[in-house]
Length: 177
Image (cartoon, rainbow, N blue to C red):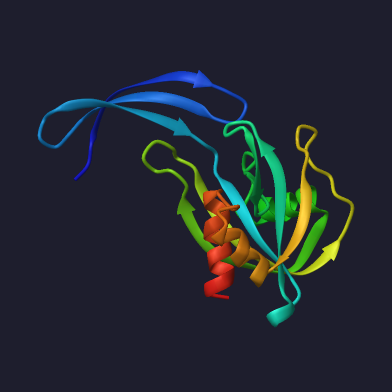
């Protein structure tokens, strides 16, 4: 099953994203509209310090205006034009946390909200971390923390992690790595 495009109108162009309204024909002949947020794509990083039972994952705490609250998240960021996902992950980890990694693995690629948004996210595992100066974007205020598996389980049980990409990354770390 697919939808046949009939018309498309760009209704917003911003610094980060664009919005369009598409008119489509369904297979049964009915017509409807789809509101689509166009996003350039992003990366998220499960940055792990240490090995085995002593391993800790890096979470950042920052205020998110869209939901009017502070959230705990894995480091993440948006792809620049022409930027490869791994290069973006390396850049974002360093900018947000002041960390670099000697070992990188691609874990998963997924769509964040395919009902209305084109954002595709690449999830990476970063290991063998090294410290450097933190250089967040000028509009970011980020607190960096290291959390053990037991601390992360407690955060999950008390619903203190509410960000979808972080839930995906944390579950990868807890149950598959």
